[in-house]
Length: 224
Image (cartoon, rainbow, N blue to C red; front, top):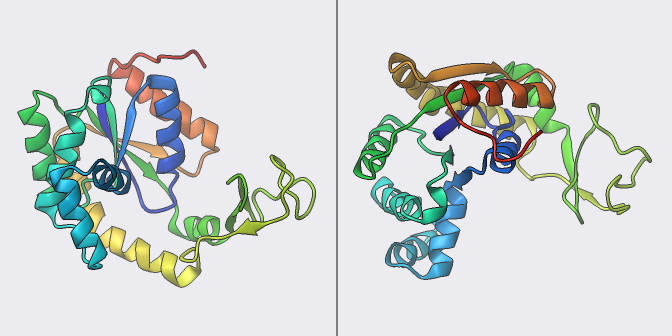
């Protein structure tokens, strides 16, 4: 089962991907993680990517495609993959089609996590994490049980992502609407696009996604 989780920044794609990794044995393919792994392994494309990143430049599509192709060739992807952060443009859609076809694989479904933008801004701007263990919190939606103390590890140190401010969040949403959202109709035309309500509680979103995958024939590797 090869899928794309689709939606704007902060829609919950990362959280849902981790649950699918746990429950279905799928591999999450994040463009950033793949690049770092290629650099660490010292592959030919990894060396090229490292040079470009050190110069502060963006990784060109042709090189990203090679990194993704190398990752898809590894045996651990045979049980299915979740594409995270790719594709984001129409040329990348075409590139992914080619990469999968060359490996006699196909994209099974694209699941859009739909969210209300104003609620999403509020969700992102208010979030913060424990600096020690990474547990997530929110100014209004999920505060620690004891004020200023992490529920998980007891630390009193917290931090926020530097770009989790309203101006930056709205800029990311504009970029998503203009550059990435237009590729969704491509998958809708193919009949493989599905939509879930990302404003539901997290567990209910997970249930909707897993129901779609089970209907497509995916089999959980663990019982919930």
